[in-house]
View 1 (spheres, rainbow, N blue to C red):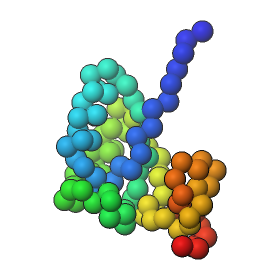
View 2: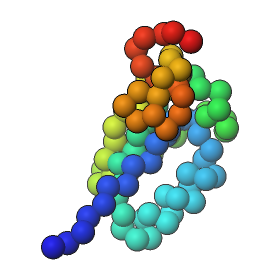
View 3: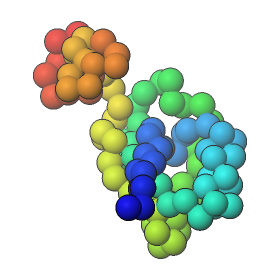
View 4: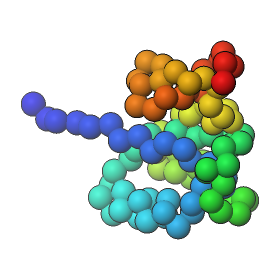
Length: 101
């Protein structure tokens, strides 16, 4: 039996830390690993505004998709709405639909 893994890269957005992203992307390309990229299309999370807005982000994402990387959505704005950890309580906050902060 062949062991397989799913690698998901969270918090991809136009204002992410492009230098860190570039390093992991280079490693994955060199090993022919095609991860799942969890994208925040309308990032409003100040913690993820680490870089200038990358004008090439969406076209680069489409190129990664073309070569086999999978794209999914990781919340629209990445803003926390509750103090509940939800289904996977790693943190005491969640981007759920109910706003009770």
